Amino acid sequence: MTTKRKVEVFSAGCPSCQTAIELVNRLACGSCEVSILDMNDINVAKRARDLGVRSVPAVAINGQLASCCSGSGIEEQALRWPRQA
Image (tube, rainbow, N blue to C red; front, side, top):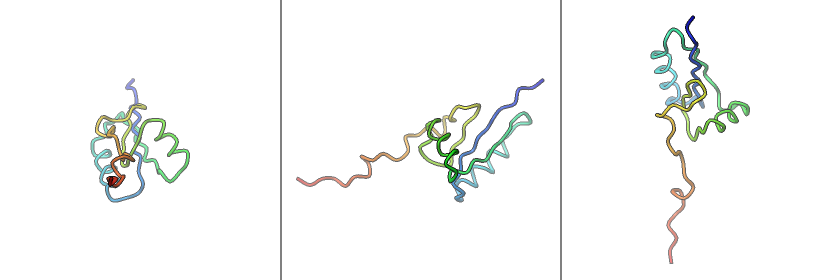
């Protein structure tokens, strides 16, 4: 018996997310169980935070954030305007 691979796609419904969903569905193997999760759902957002999702789209496989999705995301310091002396 083949073990199922749990693939979770975290999406906000944007065009970039749709492209990621299409890619995951195209690459999914016969033993993959793909779930598309809406980040507008508070429980999904909590799950994403627990996995370390910092931006969407993001993909987790068997409960681990995929390496392509583990970037640092938005950093507060990078968004601050330079302070003038």
